Image (cartoon, rainbow over all chains, first blue to last red; front, top):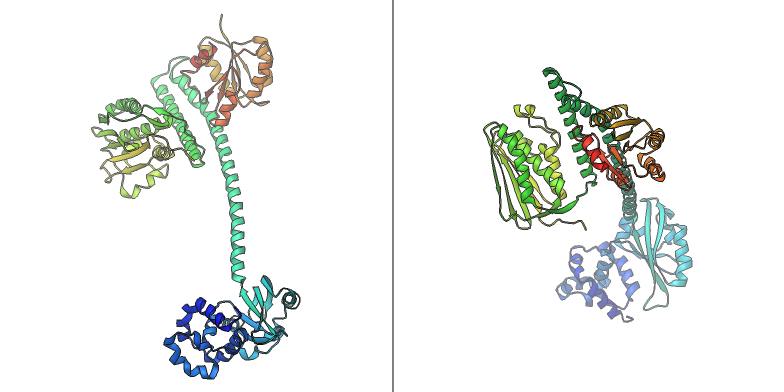
Amino acid sequence: MTNPRDKLDFLRNRACHLDRAILVLPQPALWPVLRSLVVTVLGDSLSCTQALPTARRQETSRKKTVTGSPEYSESIINTVREPLIALDQDLRVVTASRSFYGVFKVKPEETVGQLIYDLGNKQWNIPKLRELLETILPQKTSFDNYEVEHDFTTIGRRIMLLNARQIQRASEKERIILLAIEDITERREIENGLEKAHEELEELAAELERTARVKSEFLANMSHELRTPLNSINGFSEVLYDETFGPLNEKQRIYVNNVLSSGKHLLLLINQILDMAKVEAGKMKLALSSLPIKRILDEISMLVAEMASKKKIDLSIEIAGDLPDIEADELKVKEIIYNLLSNAVKFTTEGGKLGMRAKRADSEIEVVVWDTGVGIAPENMERIFEGFFRVDTPYSRLTEGTGLGLPLARKMVELHGGKLSVESKGLKCGTSVRFTLPIVARREV
Amino acid sequence: MRKKALIIDDNRNNLMLEKDLLEVAGFEVFVAENAASGIALARKEKPDIIIMDMRLPDMRGSEAAKILLLDNETRNIPIVFVTASVLAEGIEEIKAIPNAVFIGKPINTRTFAKEVKQFMK
């Protein structure tokens, strides 16, 4: 590209989208500077107006005669965000871009013609830059992405990325040096920040892993330590209640039965807390097998039928005939269904109704357990899944529950890849719990 | 002749409860509070079954079981571990021992002797 016209066409092709910017941003003060830059780069015999679109030719033709219309090159130089500076062979500034003056807070009159090292109170007297300009450039004609960190008097400590090209002037034998200066201080700060954040994240992950391990060890120990005394509490009271070593009077029987049922309640709590912790730690594993879910639903509803009939609750079970076997963890599925049905009995008043419906829904089975019991106030809809939440009604005081049955049921449904949701029109309006289980287990990849 | 059972557990309450339940069920019961004296008693009395805690003061129950397995006179005695451990690792540890099963704590007093007897056959 030795022909100046070719150079200009090349620039025009690359910069045609800048035309509008030229029109709205004429910078007469900078034209002399830019003219010298353009002339330096492209050769002084060039008529720049040839590159301008015809629509603006008339407007600019007046200036052309005076300055050779430097707008086009001005646009190119000044649109580049990075400061750009042209030096002669003695490293004196020939010209600089608008952004150079902006970034380094210097004026053209105190810049052009100065030795680069003397610029702005000698703030450019940087050993690394000297080395680049005086040692490397004469040999290599260009250098790329040299990083220089320097404390500038006007703008403080900055990190600059330097790129330079030596260019042979078209008309003369002498060469000029184009030096592009990019301030990467902020970028580097962001990069360093990201790196630091990454390190912190790794530390946090290690800490979490350690915490999870400590937690599961703690739970294993806690569970062991709590079960050992419960073995005595439940064991001895059971033997006493069974009158293995002699009869009890009525009062003694009632008292020892209270000890036993409280011990059993405590054991249920320990087991459920441990299960919750296992699910949350991702340690609960499913033992999958093919389950005859129809039979399991029947069996459990028979268990519940007894509890229901004691409270004179009308039980209705509708299980679809085409309900397929499912692939799931038998113990957990039984626990889910038992939890929901016994909750329904617990929270339904005497003479009320409860029921279970089960059907196939695409690739899942859907089970709904409903009742006409105490219901759930809208404000408690989410709280019932938090654990230990007990609906505050006279019935809840009558019934021994842990408040963990429903949250645990949801966790176990989700572990299978199903969903569990609760609906209630409000207090005393009954509750309906719907859950799904996939027919074929969704295995983790 | 009455069947002999040996219970090794450092928790005296457990020891008493299990002893009572097995005696009521017709066993002659021997007790030890640590593995070393339990192993000695096993060699002396040659019980029909050993009921053992997994956490003993001088060694783990699984280690005591290995020692019993190395001795021709005690190697065929079935072992029932009564464990409060609910973690998979603890259960794997027991499954690795031949001729051993486990009963979870707390025990069911109504079925305990029956479960022990079942395992003797």
